[in-house]
View 1: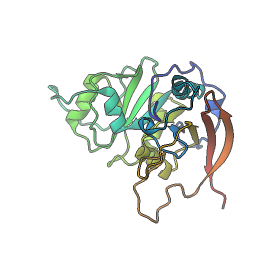
View 2: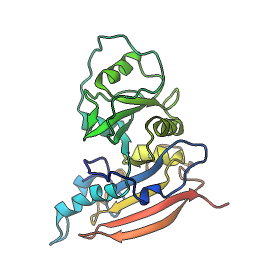
View 3: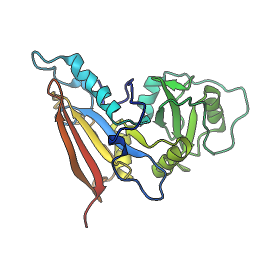
Length: 265
């Protein structure tokens, strides 16, 4: 089990949960829920977690992430480049056709599937197909990616949108996802750097954390949010968390939910 993507059977229709939260009046972006699994000390690598206590079913603990994911009624999930490359397992290749000079969004044949969104500014993920864990692959890119790479994505049937000239305009990319695909809710599933970038950009509407009954304990292991800024930077500045619910799941896993709000003056 990880804090990242896993195959899931999501509800066909939006639940009441998915319709909660703030929506900007003029923004087209979907509601973004950062949904992660951590140890009690906030670490992200399950291979490092201590084992469950006697009588606790490890397999049951692993199922909670997908089951909770389905309760949001989201239309897709997002992760960073490294995680998506591990999932896609595609290989780089030479495209025989002409490159794509346009920097407008491209929509492949989604066929009503959920979205599997890769935040990949430099265009390093290779797909070889348009299906990832049963969902439709979408790349979020910088406008500086090569024409040949865009041609490769089109050959694979992978959709794409742009996050500005350098790929850092996540707000623009999220607006494009909402406008282009009509999605209302997306799950942000790590890793730590991507979560940190979304936090810094003020784009997270809700934080959902499943706390595994385990500990890691080692300094330097990735935690939920890791923004590589200067020592005096505060990525969460201007934001406040309002507790929504706490639920204890079978085996002792605890599910915490917080709404992200504008901090009071």
